[in-house]
Length: 214
Image 1 (cartoon, one colour):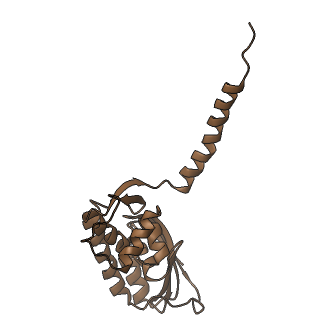
Image 2 (cartoon, one colour):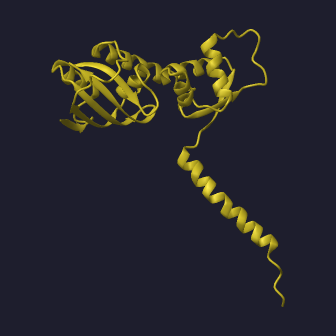
């Protein structure tokens, strides 16, 4: 088993080490990327990536998120992966180049799309007639209108997050949508739900409590 931190051994060096050694097994990655916290698994067969998955995505969309982790930890466990369904066809070097390219794209659009966990809404009531959108643009726009974030939209469409972010960036530049806020996490929403009834209950008690007699 190989285990450590990504400060001591970068993602690039780690994958090259596994690839050149023609290792077979499971690589577990956990850490922080420019898109937020992420964790997932890469499955190697004789040094080549056979499949990838995060909590939400599988295949190439998942591997993009995992290969741009900058700080975190890894654990490689030698094991049989013959039962894992193959979802990656590109060699390791091509995947590293692809992830670097995707990261460059994210850095170019993050001035207008600051977070993949943000919510967006239509800039005006109607989409201008002169703007022509293709099918995938309409699908992303429809998901945004239903209060899905970029991350959630990528999950529902099973395409990588940065590709969805690029589409949203284009919609922002065309003034079709605007970023309004970052969506609260499930933990934040749960905290609000826990706190709200208490406040409502206290106000109800104050309003219904009979006046004390002097």
